[in-house]
Length: 89
Length: 89
Image (cartoon, rainbow over all chains, first blue to last red; front, side):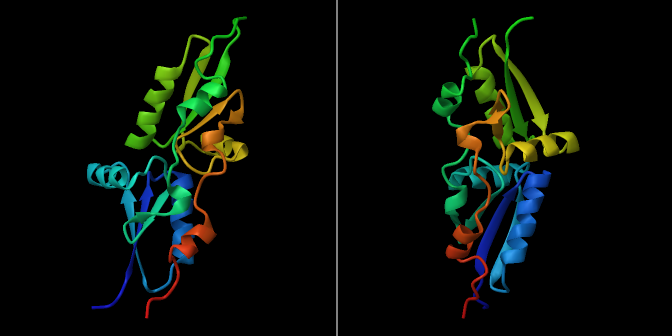
């Protein structure tokens, strides 16, 4: 059985995500087994949530979310500090 | 002319993005003028690129990308360090 590294790319199919899929394909080597997973598929969404995906594109390598894709998504405090929800006089 | 704060929410329409749109709506107040922009629309993609959007969902407030959404997207060095592109023996 050939030894492969599992690369999961979580994509919503938008241009930003498609660009990331190309970036991953360009960086990959024959040992990289790439799956592009559609975030509009409930199975993928559940998988993404289990890995902590909160923004896309996101990449998991051998079942672990890559550092550049972890801990992302909207931050309520940051959004409030930038003015969201603060009435203007 | 009523004084409004411009809130742009960049969404690819996937569940993760839809959840973020709800989060922004829940945090907003009457001063917040929210536009949900579809990343599959070329005009939106160009706008997102001009603001530095590299992952979605993303929020810009009065034309400035919120701190929690800036500088995101895939990082080649981080992906390589995690094994992408490194042949297995």
